Structure formats: C-alpha cells, structure tokens
Length: 215
Image 1 (tube, rainbow, N blue to C red):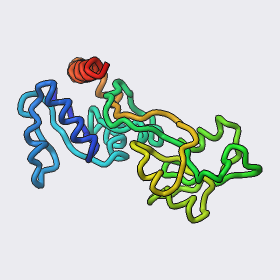
Image 2 (cartoon, rainbow, N blue to C red):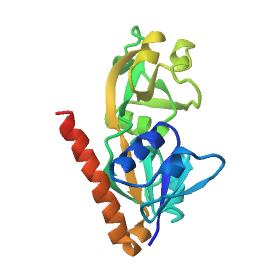
Image 3 (cartoon, helix red, strand yellow):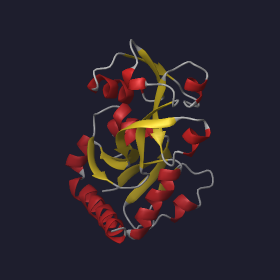
C-alpha cells in the first residue's frame, strides 16, 4: 500500500530528503519540483507533498497524509491526535527565554509580559515556574517587543543566537530542545502498519548512523 508523506517546506524539507536519499528512496521529483504539488517516489511505494508546518499536523490528523515530518515546536503548539514515533534528530534548535540584560525577569514584582509566537509553550513554562505572566502573541520579529517596551521578555526559538545578540538580548533559560519528528495518523498505523514500520526502520538507521558519526 502507498504511504502518503507530508513534508514541512524549507530547511526540514531539504534535511528530510537527504535522509530519504541515504535510505535509498527515489526523491528525484522532490528535487526538480517545477509546479507539481504531489511527487511520486521512483523506488518505493510512497508519494510526497510539501506543506507548511501547521498544515502538516492537519493533514496527518485528518488522514490525508499517513505520516508527516514536522518540528517539535509546531507539535507543542498544535493538535495531539496522532502518534509521534521517531525523533529524526534534524532541524535542531531550542526554545529559550530572553530579555534585555537590565531586566531581572525572574525576580520582577507583579505580572510580567512575555512576547512570543508560541503562547502554549510560553504559558506552560511560566506556569511551571509559578509565575504570573501575560502572554502577548506576536507573529513578526519577537526580538523587537522588549526593545520597544511592549514586553519584559520573550520566548522564542534559537538556533545560533546571532539575532538575539545583534538586538542586545540575553538568554536567561532554556525551555526545551527542538528537533524534527515523524508523526503518524492513528488509523493509518493500523491499516498500513508494516509499511510505516519499514519506513521508520529505514529512517531510524540513518538517525543512528548520524549519531555514531558525531561521537
């Protein structure tokens, strides 16, 4: 049976294709996309389509995609009606708390304001600290909000930390690490269990190989 696989566009797309190539899959169509939207694997019984991160969860939850590759950051904010079966160990970064150096965020009296694109992650983090916070959802450059006085601090994704430094912000704490995960539709896992497990085994072999090479 054919497996439909939703891939998150952008950096994760390239990293996932590289993993599939290492497994011996036929991803030629994904590398020469043109105007196509759905791509057939030339060596395996798979078809791929590219979507935005939030849509990856939607397609998997509704069964249009049997499996999907999406960042843990998106999973922490999105729905839960799927199985998360493999950490692909790609697209690594982390959620951090940051502020201007003069802001004593964790000792400030009264309510603090936190700017973020990820309100669920931020709310749960500060709840675990027993802190009273107002979460302000920001879709653009989160780093701008403390500079203009909208927020006391931010919760955001950090890969290298360059943008934070360039804007005079300092990291106060790490919320959690992030990497790409393979998620699976619950019904598909029953109906196409063997095919999906074969895919997981192939990808897991690359994860282990890459982990061994970095030790």
